[in-house]
Amino acid sequence: MASIEEQRLNKWIKVLHGKDAEMSRIAAEKLGDIGNPVAIPDLDKALHTRTLFVAAVAAKSLGRIGDKSAVNSLIKALSNKRQDVVVRTAAAEALGNIGHYSAISSLEEVVNDYIEKYKNDRYNLIQGYERGLFTTAIRSLKQIGTSKANRIASNAEKF
Image (tube, rainbow, N blue to C red; front, top):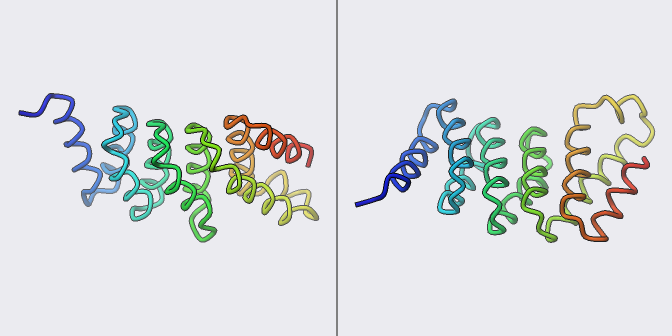
C-alpha cells in the first residue's frame, strides 16, 4: 500500500495531465511544493505540451525541485524562441534555481540576443516585454555563480 505522500504525489500527477488547465496549473504548483523528483518527467511533459501558464508553473516547479535531470528540458524551453516569453522566463528562473553550469551558454545567448535586438532602441531596452526574460537570465547567471557566469552577468548589467 502506498504511503500518504505517495498517494498525494500520484493524485497531483494525475490532475496535472487532466483536461482542466487551471487545475493542471495548480497541480504543477503542488508538485513543486512536494519537491519529489519522481514528478520531474510529468512536469517536463507539461512544460512542453500544456498551455503557457501550466508550462510556466511546471518550469518553476522543476526549478524548485532542483534536480539537475531537469536542466536539458529547461534549456530546450529557454532556447525555443517561438516559445512564449512567460515560459522562457520561467525556464530561465528555474535554471538559476538549479544552478547547473551547463545552463550558462543558453542564458548567455538570451542576454546577448536581447542586447543585440535593443541596442539601438533605448526605450524598448528598458520597457520592452522581453525585459523580464533578460533580467531573469542575468539573475540566474549570478545564481550559478561561476566566474564565467558572473562575468557575463556583470557585462550585461553595464548595458
